[in-house]
Length: 255
Ligand code: 13P
Image (cartoon, rainbow, N blue to C red; front, top):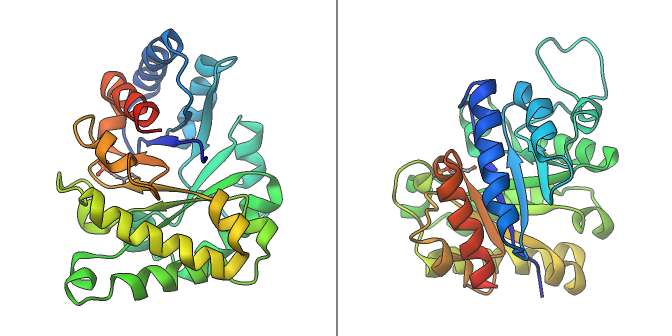
């Protein structure tokens, strides 16, 4: 049985004091229960250390939203895996559609970042997903297949096994229109089959695949009750402690 994993992607939101308050409130709610769910907070870079101080000693893990593929050097404005590790991160989101769309990240860039994350001991949360036009054109599977194959190109099964995948249909992100549980299940089963082809049955059976895109407390349980939906990557609803906590609770109820 795969343990559910729920991550909050705060994107470019909150000041440092707001981030501290949000994580403090979430910790209070989360610690009142003993939910069998892995939880990751992914704030902006400058919030990582202050948020780490708030969640230290709890079961809440820290993740970043991006990293650079090189180890160090003259890359003004970039952040390395080692910096993230030394800030307390265990996870890093890679290849989010907003990075692909606004910052030109290609499958090859995603591949390099996934490699760097793994080499450093960070768990990459690898994002894939089709646009509305691609879905309408019946290209969902071919797009997702290209992204998955691209992200893991040249990697062995041990490496693939140390990742998390997030299926985030671009048309569902920030729109209030979530994929139906059936739509999410269909693509996520397809992704798992693809992983089986790339890394074998055992890796595919153990790999966690999150769904992301307009996840709310109202739809979270139905989505995560699907057999191949092992958690959620939450944007907007992770910016409030109560709604994020409700989604974590939904994950435990869906387990
Ligand atoms: P929303 O939950 O705001 O739709 O964002 C999803 C997302 O992009 C998480 O990475």
